[in-house]
Length: 153
Image (cartoon, rainbow, N blue to C red; front, side):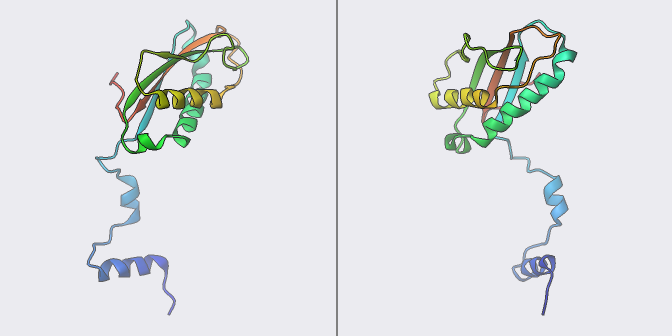
């Protein structure tokens, strides 16, 4: 007898006494207890026209966040908390400033997470050229929130 996968899952649910829940409702309603282990906030410190920078900044944000999420340390997955703020410069060609390092602002006391944040930025660079109208170098600040909600704006 040939049975479709959904029918066999329903059968397992009935036999085991579980109430079947449509898959679509599981996907569309996130658990209220779930909080992502990581978030990121970006600030442009240089004076610049925000509308000109928006595509560049959005692309850089997505790239750094993806790199950070793909390499999250196990300690973060197990609940380690920290807030790491890094200031850095991006040159006209999108590369990181050679003379200005990735500077940790303050002291988080979490060296491994500081290194993770710096590595996420370095591995995401170069970011592509800055818009013609933007100042160079562009001074930026990225704040990495590990198992800590960012402050509400």
